Image (cartoon, rainbow, N blue to C red; front, side, top):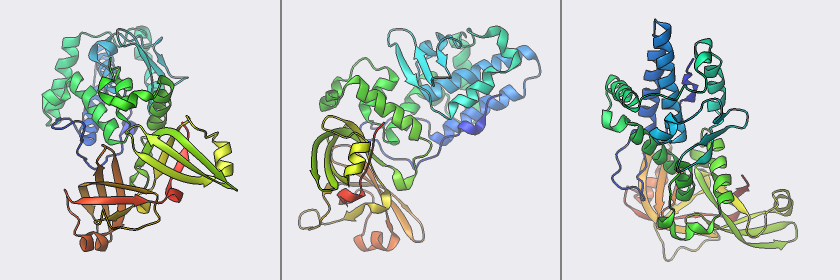
Amino acid sequence: MPDSSLKSEARPAMPLASLPGIEHLSVPELDKLEHAFKNRADKAKRPEHKVSRLRLWLLFILLRHAALRLGEVLALDDEADIDLGGGILHVRGQHARSIPLPHRLLPVLRRFFSQAPLSSQRGTLCALDPGFVRRNFYARARECGLSPALASPKAIRQARAVELIEGGMPLPAVQSFLGQPSLESTGELLDYDESDIKAITSHYLRKEAKLKTSARNVFPGVVHTVRQSGFMAEVGLRSFSNLEIVAVITQESLENLQIAVGKTVIATVKAPLVVISRDEHSIRTSARNKFTGIVSALTRSGILCEVVVNLREGSQVCALVTTASVDELALAVHTPVTVLFKAFSVVLSVA
């Protein structure tokens, strides 16, 4: 049966500098809609109704997590195109591509396909009438008190794209994931080849359910300098959004990860290790990584406060600081700030 274990970890809403004014369903609303499809399938009395509703749930899950176009999902052969062993979804058509499936989705799909009522229709489970699909999506949205316009197949695809961007996936990786025909708007991001994009996409899908506040600062990029001294090494990388980041790691880590100039890596900085300052020009510090931006969100608690900063080049940095520090710095949304973190605070990994 459909499984509610796919529920995504809700994240605080964050403005998208690259997608201004886009109206979309939030993660909790998408989860609510998924639950509506599951409940309707569970309540079916007649076998033919149950199969029909299970097929609709399958289409919603694939649209929701793989961000497919409606035509792409309707053209899927569920036996040949959904590779549960390899965790890959093969998309046919004009924008043919192979998409890594979220790991948490694989056992749910295995249980789904093992159900006896579906066995006679394997290979054609996705072949439904597009008008029938749209009507059911709109109906489930109304049941959930959501705008039907925001629950269309196209809007579901868009909501997934926004979710990936908010989670930190670089724009070119999102565009590749969605099968966008052109990356012309990404400028220098085109320096990264297809293998880089696939590695970054796989990394984000593996980590998506695990990313928490303390590790939400994730910057994929390419190494452009390596300096070795004794048992330590300094690694300089340029992120997909053209952010220059410096990390200091051990020589052993450098060798184990096979890090060299031209290597695609992911730099991660935990939120408690990010320092925020209001003094951009005169601040003197040993921190190698210093960037300016604007506070876009504040989430306060009794002791700690989560501060999200939009950097000038488009990236976001999350810091976890004391509420007393926030008050002392008079931080508020739209406040210009400088964020800093030491090179020793940067953790490097490879996809």
